[in-house]
Image (cartoon, rainbow, N blue to C red; front, side, top):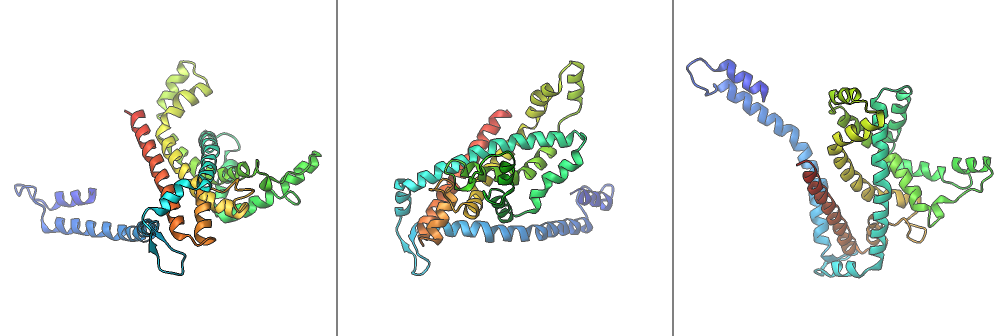
Amino acid sequence: MTDTRATQRIVTRPGAGNTPRPAGRRAHRFDVVAAWGMLTPAVVMFLTFVIVPALVGIGLSFTEWDFFRPPVFVGFDNYTRLVSDPDVWQALGVTIQYVVLGVIPTVLIGFMMAVLINANMPGVPVLRVLYFVPVVLSVAVSAVLWSFMYDPRQGPIAALFRVVDVPPVDFLNSEVLALPSLVLMMIWLALPIVIIFYLAGLQRVPEDIYSAAALDGAGTWRMLWSMTWPNVMPTTLVVVVLQIINFVANSLDVALIMTGGGPLGATRSLSLYAYEQAFMSQNVGYASALSIFQLLLIVGIIALGRVLGSRSFR
């Protein structure tokens, strides 16, 4: 936009009004074409891999389909079944546990690590390398790695327990410990993105408020919770919404690889239940209804976050 205006100023003669000459119009058309040229691949990808599958999923949720015979329209039967299915509410409870146990620690730990990294304290270069490691690993590789760590026979955690003469714990086969063990791995996987968001948010906090607080005798913790934390609240709202989506979506991959949804459904989220209905029971229509139900929950949470955020910053 700046280059276009500069071009128009150069080609406009005194007394000729503000009408750009053909050279200015050509430059403007070139900018528009260039912008559309750069946007088009992203728009096509978004339509192909997000919008079209979502519309197909909505359509399938009103059908009964087993991959082999043509879909049969059944109206709202899948949604009626969804409401009365006890496995849905158990999976919804597990999904809520993933979110509650995962999002709050991820946000707080990510914020504290970003503050430490931003402060350039001794050892920060090592911390920067360590926090960036999960970024280069896929969810599947991370899940296999953490499954080995939790192995009660050969894993490093079991080895540490043996050193202090404590019997090894079978984390992934414990009905109580399986879900927290998976959440711990997901927190480790999510922290790098959260730290990057908070590092960007910390750059926007004015330095002069710290100088004024120091003159008033405010300590480090006082500055952290009374000045830094409120100033990064917009970043926090974004991070919370993204991590809710992350813990809902990634619970499928992580639970499928590490526990298969067990033991006794203790780690089976809504995503995994929909996967089981689609690819194990061949109830594609019902699985689509489950996915739409989950999508509506996420959209509702995002809308609630926007409302709370708009009220907080009025």
